[in-house]
Image (cartoon, rainbow, N blue to C red):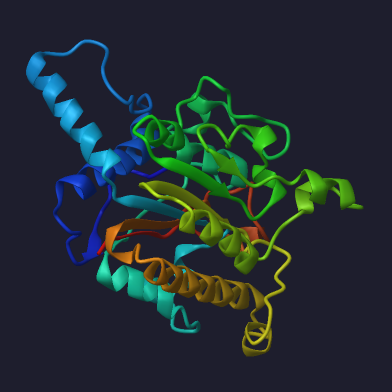
Length: 313
């Protein structure tokens, strides 16, 4: 998912615990794999020395004990539209807080400014020429791909995917490794237009994720996909009125509000102390720059540069 090299980072050092280090290392290796063109990280090598076997066993046991992982992908969010990335015309206090307490990566680039291929890269650590997904609606992530959810489920994690738009429906292959995954069949049947236009508001997605997380007895991996910044820009109140001249910013401010609810929910579930939260975007938005209103065709910073934040207690 990431461009190389990472040219800087800001924020405090993440907690140094064996369990957190193991999980953090796994997430980073999968993401950097997209940059290097490497293979997905396997759950364990086939042949290894006795000392290596002991090390793998220890890491597996650390994963089984936790911590939890919450991956939040914010669809169509360009990095330079967040306060913590220098944008002063918006209020994003929740994302800014996650960044100030965690690690903010300054230079991160999506491999492709399209939702399904970009998420395939996030989940597998491969670029589109490797995982084969090139567009929305007409491609599918192959079953032979190894996803982050599959790796974590093999280490006794419960896995749940909570999706904000039909473009990431299970039929497109991104549900691999998830015990629970949002089902859009009913919404598709009721839709009078293209199913690719079906989306859910962020609070609805979060409510589904919160219900699931609350039921988990052991460590869990929750992927929460918030589609709100994607066009059409129709933020709810009070964000619609507050950003009436800049509805795209209004959608981002609303999404920031949803992340505040996520943090509050984790705290109420007593999971804030044992959860790694990763926040990033799949791609940005043209907003008329370089002659592109939305995204898909060009790879300028407007559509390629994305935020990436790691937060842990």
